[in-house]
Structure formats: C-alpha cells, structure tokens
Image (cartoon, rainbow, N blue to C red; front, side, top):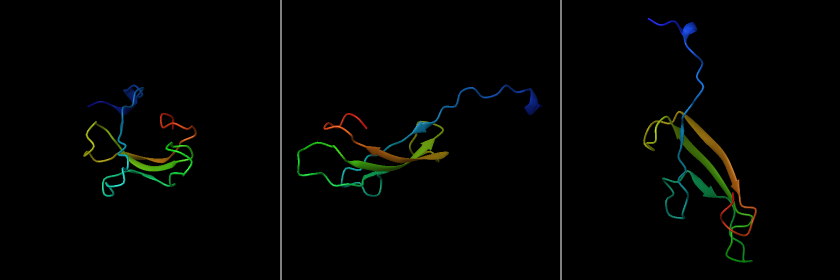
Length: 84
C-alpha cells in the first residue's frame, strides 16, 4: 500500500474541452449561442457576442460525464470570423 506522502506531485493535467456551436437549429445540443444579432452593415461577425457553457471531460468522448465546465464568452473584434 502506497502512502500519499511519498507520491510525486502531478505536473500534467489533461482535460478535453467540448464546444458545440449553435447553428440556429440545434437548440438541444448547443453549448454556445449568439447573444447579439447580425448587423445590416455587412456580412461579417464584428461585434458578435457568443456565450458558452461547455463540458470538460477527462477523455475525448463528448458523452463522458463532465469533470468541470468552461463558461464565458467570445467577442468578435474584427470584420472577419477568424479571431475570437
């Protein structure tokens, strides 16, 4: 039987973040949703706010029980959709 005092501290923690983007139809499965509407100024994402509540699991299976949750938001700050 090993003593807890003799074990080395954990130096690496591996968790998996799962983000399911809301596409306008997947209400039940989405973990992210738009909080703002698109503007009439053009077809770009500037000013869009995406709010998320995503599961974090111990393995790469989305159906595994979550060990934590990632909550927050993305804010698009340029005229393209490549930066959040």
